Image (tube, rainbow, N blue to C red; front, side, top):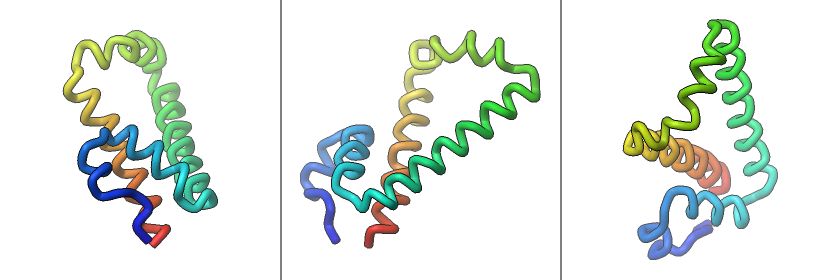
Length: 92
């Protein structure tokens, strides 16, 4: 099952590709993967709180994209690509 045009895949950003895939892929799989992302986020927040890092996190969050744009974009793209990979693999 080819759910995206190969030419579009090579010329778009991971974020745009993610948005395209979640609109066309099996919605049960998409929902399951989004729930997994939120579960990971919930655990990360819990770990931040348990280690007393909320203040540091809130302070650094707004500036991360500006202070370290390359690392920020690589991490964001990695999350989009990982999720798209999980969705596409399960749709095959």
